[in-house]
Amino acid sequence: MLRVARSLCHFQRAENIMSDLKSIELLARAERVIPGGVNSPVRAFRSVGGKPVFVTRAEGAYVVGADGAKYTDYVGSWGPMILGHAHPAVVSAIAEAAKNGTSYGAPTELEIRYAEKIIELYPSIEVMRAVSSGTEACMSAIRVARGFTGREAIVKFAGCYHGHADFLLVKAGSGALTYGVPDSSGVPAATAKDTITLAYNDVPALEALFRARGSEIAAVIVEPVVGNMGVVPPVPGFLEAIVRLCSSHGAVSIFDEVMTGSRVARGGMQERVGIRPDMTCLGKVIGGGMPLAAFGGRRAMMEKVAPLGPVYQAGTLSGNPVAVSAALAQLDRLDAKLYGKLESLGARLEKGLAHSANKHGIDACVQRVGSMITLFFTKGPVRSFTDAVKSDTARFGRWHRGMIARGQYWPPSQYEAAFVSAAHTEADVDATIAAADDALA
Ligand code: HOZ
Image (tube, rainbow, N blue to C red; front, top):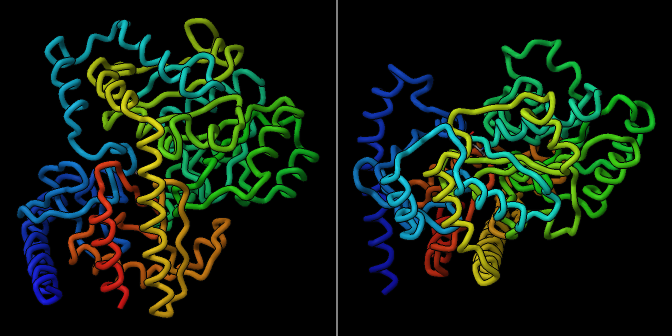
């Protein structure tokens, strides 16, 4: 039995190595017309010393590479695919909506239903606006906070990534950290000068900053669980301190729940910890796998947005009917049973990876919140950017190449979260743990 399993495993590995040949060909072609051959840097696999798998299709917990090799997917389009790929209800909602036209640039009843749904899931949001990406959501929320307070300084935390707006690309995580450009070139110094960066989880530093400059601060923006330097949960009291200090100094607290929103709970991390920030940014899961995101919050703040107020914000495809239909189909399927399953699969994966790293005597730690998980190649715990960058990224790269060769599509960066979906099974997770163990060995 074991021999059969082993030979199947070798067969799968050979199949995946073959698939690289076709992907390598496609990469060479892509590199002639697209920077680095990819439309977003983290897809490039450069930091793990590999070549990206060009995907031809995806279903459930799996993606299929250019040569037909199948991978168990823990990227999940970087978070949105909580139901797994090509969920029949989502696909049919898209097909039905498309029959009525794909974009009108005019209001629809669907958008109202969508806003009502988001407001039901996130009681801190009284009014919201739909946009097309997490970048837009964060950029717009900051503009509202500045317009509302009449102040310019914003506070972010090192290693948090809030999209690629100029003033947020300061000590940024995600691809910016992966490729060593946390302070991107092309961002004018004048634009970044109002962005103050502190260490994540450092309450005393935040208190000191508010004591010194509280009246200048328009907003504090935070990932309530960081996913963009790997998974880093907040220490008890950190999120509470942000909301309390903002409230007592007239600043706006913004939870960037683009990654955690409806991922760690139906109502995001704010539901898990029972905190209501002033504003929230959403994307990924709440977009149903389509280019759809949102920002919203207190009515008094959101009423600053044009056409009601002086804060301008707009978008041709905002609230797109096909995207909103997909999102509603996905959101309607998020129930307690689903989050129970994700929690149990996530815990199983965490335990298996931690056991394996321990067995091989590797300095590593596994950090997880719900179905977001990172295997850090450092002893840990990882509580901040400074801790995260102690990771042995060369070792992560070797492990990642081993995982790809074993049919496991793990995020190609030490500084990204992996995601379990409701389409994964215990058998999938056990096979991933076995592959991870083999790759670690
Ligand atoms: N924001 C995603 C997770 N870090 C990555 C998406 C991308 O940059 O392509």
